[in-house]
Amino acid sequence: MSLKPLLLLLACLPLAAGAQDLTKVLRDQATNLLPQVIEWRRALHQHPELSDQEVKTSSFVVDHLQQLGMDIHTEVGGHGVVAVLQGKKPGPVIALRADMDALPVTEKVDLPFASHDSAEYNGQTVGVMHACGHDAHTAMLLGVATILANMRDKLPGTVVFIFQPCEEGAPAGMPGGAARMISQGALDNPKVDVIFGLHIQAAIPIGDIVYKPGSFMASADQFNVHITGKSAHGSQPWQSIDPIVVAAQIITGLQTIVSRQEDISKAPVVISVGSIHSGLRFNIIPETADLVGTIRTLDPAMQQDVHERLQRTVTDIAAASGAKADVAIDTKTLVTVNDSSLTYQMLPSLEKAAGADHVHLAPAGFMFAEDFSFYGQKVPAMFFFLGGLPAGADPAKAAPHHTDKFYIDDSRLDVGVLAFCQLVFDYAKLHRR
Image 1 (cartoon, rainbow, N blue to C red):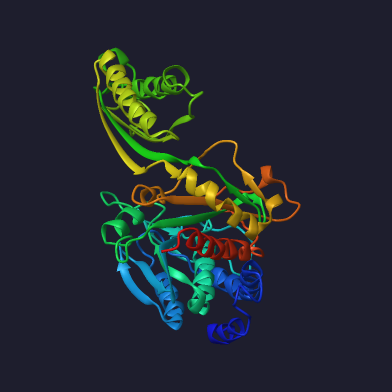
Image 2: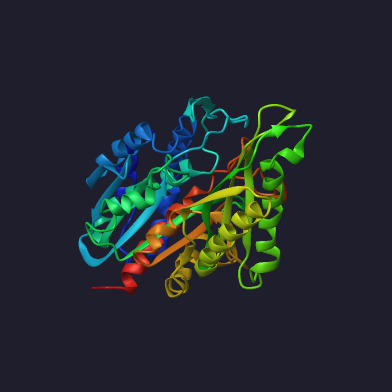
């Protein structure tokens, strides 16, 4: 379906809040645009691109934005796109963000729009899949841009649409997409007052919204440990300093940071080793071993404390066996913190979009991580989850994000579109200039 007939259709809907309740106007527009949003999402799903490779995705976004008469900036922070919509009424500058990248996963979901694409990743040819829902995020934000552009005459202030690359992880030695876009002025021209973001979730009932003031999602650190011992014949371990044994002791020792050293009644901590590599033959004790893992916390001070304890634990355990261990910790994301006053202030907007019975306060933060956290270091920020679990399905059986059977029901993406639109108008009303 072409965008131009839809714009004409939307333009026929009444826009004046005095003639009709604004929420109904926005809901009607989101409902009318839903088939196009789903079409966009499925097109993006069928042809995903890895982090820092989002060339066609970026062009897809720009092609649609150009029809809306916005000020468009491309190649921001890599393949990022920033589009600025100036309303006809005075008001604040509000940013909305969607991420665009996919993952090195071979899709195993039987869908007519399943991905069969592949790409090079870490020297290997891999399948590529939108196994986290970024295709839905991009499609929803395109829908929001379409509706708000159509309502430009009634729009107070300015809306900055941020289509971000590289959320899933930057190439080695490079910052992620959010940090790069910020460094290249995504929040500065014009100066953004507030930013909103969302993430679809496969285990939350379709159309429901989940929010939480304060720490909402965890920080994510990658740690690399390189252990140097002494090689020997496998039959004579006493002549070695066995790095594999040292690695095993370190893996066990790291869990005491969680279970015995951090106050997990304050906030949870996760330390997981995801990779261990050492040796070549069954009868040779190798000289070195390497561990790679992740640290997740929901408290910024605790994050730094864990860094110090991990460094000490690793080096001291290695030293006790006569080995040497080098530790490197790379912070991928910070704790995603929702500005509490902003979150409570905008809660009615979420309830208008989904219905009060479908908006839920999360009892605790989530150990997922999101580089949306970097925007929240610069301006007040609010991030929430949108459900994509099919009606009647068991959340416990939903395929996790980042897996080959990840699936979302896209039939209620209009709730996300409406939520963003409602947040823009309600925030502008509360912060008139």
